[in-house]
Length: 279
Image 1 (spheres, rainbow, N blue to C red):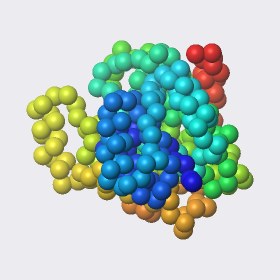
Image 2 (image 1 turned 60 degrees about the vertical axis):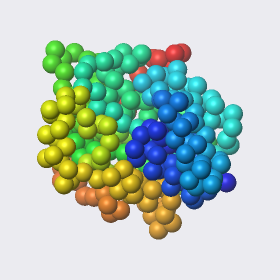
Image 3 (image 1 turned 45 degrees about the vertical axis):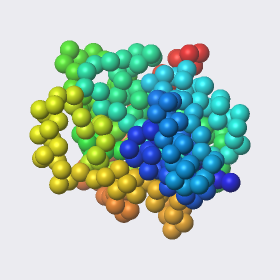
Image 4 (image 1 turned 90 degrees about the horizontal axis):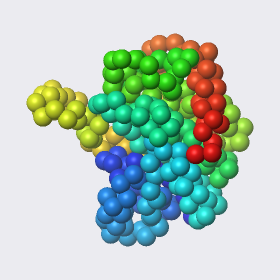
C-alpha cells in the first residue's frame, strides 16, 4: 500500500488532499497542529470514502521538537513514503517568533517543511513524489545573508510571507537536483487565490472588502488542491521534477532566479538546523 503524508491536513486544501489520497487507497498520515480538529476531519473522511487507513499525527511546524516527534512516530509505523505534500501555510499578521527564535511565517512555511522533508528522506525511494505549495507572492521574496534573523523595526507580513515561499521554491530546486538520480521527483504548485483562512486579516471591515473584491478570483479548496493531486498521483508526469505548476501546466517564470541566493539560503538553513540539532 502506498503511503502519503500531508501537512496542514486539517485546513481547507489539506482536507481535499486527504480525501483524494484516501479515494486512491493510500495509507494517509494527516499532519495537523490542531489534533482535535484533525481527528474530527479524519473520521468524517473515513465515513465518506469508506477507507480506514487514515490517521492523524500531531505536528507543529514552528517547533523542531514537534517535527522530530512526528518523524519518530512515522518511522515507528511506516517503512516507505510515496507522497509528501508540504501543504501547510500561514500568514501571520503580527510579529511572533518560533521556539527556535525565527519569525513565525518563515519558521512554518519554509524552515519547518525543510527540516521535515530532510528527516523523512530515508523513507523515500525511486517513485516518491514531493509537492510543495507556493504562492504567487513568492516572486517578490528576497533572501538575505541573515535570513533567519529579525532585525527590522517594521514588520511586514507580506514581505515575510513572500520570503518564505521563495525559500520553499529554492528548496524545491535544490531537492530536485540532489535527488533526481534517485528517482525522487520534487515539484511545486501555485494554487492561485484559494478561499482559506489565510486570507483573513483579523479586521472585519478589511476582510469584508477583500471578500467582495477578490470573490470573482477566489478558488474553492477543491480547485486549489487539483494540481497538487495531479502531481502526486498522475502517471504522465511521474518523471517531471524541479518545476512550478499552475492549472496542471508548467509555469514559466517571468523573472530570473539568483543561484547565489539559493546557495546562500541552503547553507544558512543547514547551519541553522545543525546549530539547533539538540532541540
